[in-house]
Length: 382
Image (tube, rainbow, N blue to C red; front, side):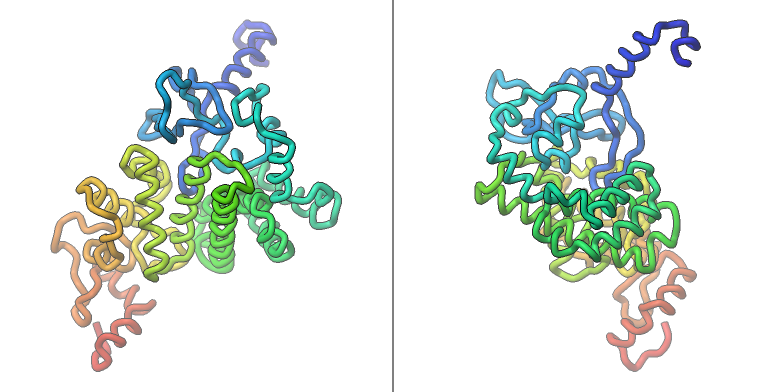
């Protein structure tokens, strides 16, 4: 059809498609993992692929930016990965099946059968696909390919219930399920209120905790020399898992916030000492919108804005606190206060602010009435 429409041969159409397949960049937000298209970047396309890259690439504000992932020797070729970080954790055979060419990078050329076997031991067992649970996992993967997000979540919940012990033992098998599961959750969260609240939100929080645990286990195995994985890609996964865990955990506990701040600091270090790497994530949501099931803590946009200001001022993110964020955000909707003094504080506890009377009333009925009474037991109204 294309050949006829443009008066070219089928061979020319096939050649152009192959060029696009091999050179186009899939555009995916760093933390939420949401796909939003593909693009061709002429200069960036000249970079060759490596399964153990010395560079990291990321679209930032319309441009494809390339960052050094480690110290690079003079004369060493700059290579990044054509595969996302999570797929670089796979054995050679699985990585190769996702490329349009035979990879001859150093990692692939030197990956021994023992190294391949050590990664395979962390994936689903060889005969698992033929079992009843294996067929269930296959059905789940079909749903993810078809982008049926609701079906993906339903099947994923069932897999997490049935196979949790296996996934805890085999972190690569866990990532195989959890990566598409969490992506489906983010898509459902952006599409409907149902996806942000109720049982799905609770299940996603548990999935995020297991995802982070699995990545941490891979880091420990890699550090101990039991397996060999690309350091920068593994670090990227670990850092993004910290942000995702905070988003879905939905709390302001000191331990959770500490993980978030360390993760943001690490991502900034990976991507040019700036949090512009999260710009695409924020493009999917209003900066004040909290993706968590509740609205009791500042949204992602408020945190990123405050963290970016700390980094720009060369301050340690460890000095940033959620209390500091409350000073400039609406307690209910997490909207940032653009002009100091434009938001009104709770007249009783003086601890939180609201962007207007409507959100003050909603917060009072939902949660702040109880919290405010804890601080001021004699007061009954706000």
